[in-house]
Image (tube, rainbow, N blue to C red):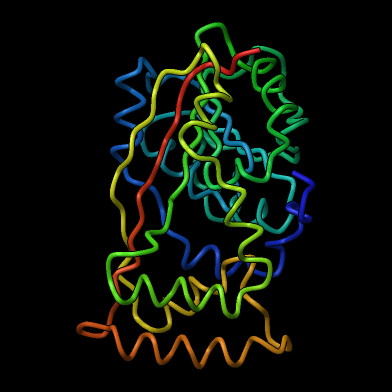
Length: 255
């Protein structure tokens, strides 16, 4: 997770990330259970960030180890999930997790896979998996079209975002993920998901993104003005619908 300084990009955005990033549909866990995953399977959450994906699997009864190289985000997960006896967080990267051989039944990567060295992590994931183990890669794909708000928000990011296109282009398509799994590919699913945000929530959601210019950048104030205008023009009852498709891919990583 070294390209574009991925281990550092969110250090000064942790509070916005904790408060405003979306969670994931519970149906995602149910889909994995349909593939044979059981609540007693141990989970390694790679690139776990502030623990949003870890919480999903803790709630489903799993024991979760979060692997996160960014200290600020790792600390946030430990504060949030401190009462969870089945949760632990450790310093490590996707390519060098520090986990023991054959120690994990389910490796998950949520909203982080596009930062990984995908060749190196294939070998690392195989190393830490048990013989029954699976890998699940998933993320929330923001819908780019369909409503005036969604389309206006995409235009805003193109106009004011810092390296937005470079980051957006890193997400794999369905065929690319199937190739990454190879003969061990078990399939994919997609689930609708959404946040209903007031203006403050929308601003926080924007500022949690690594490509949103921070205060002091020449694009910051114009971006905030454009966001205010977009919200005022598209809100309904004081909120906008921030819509996603949550896509998940699962299998055993091939050679």
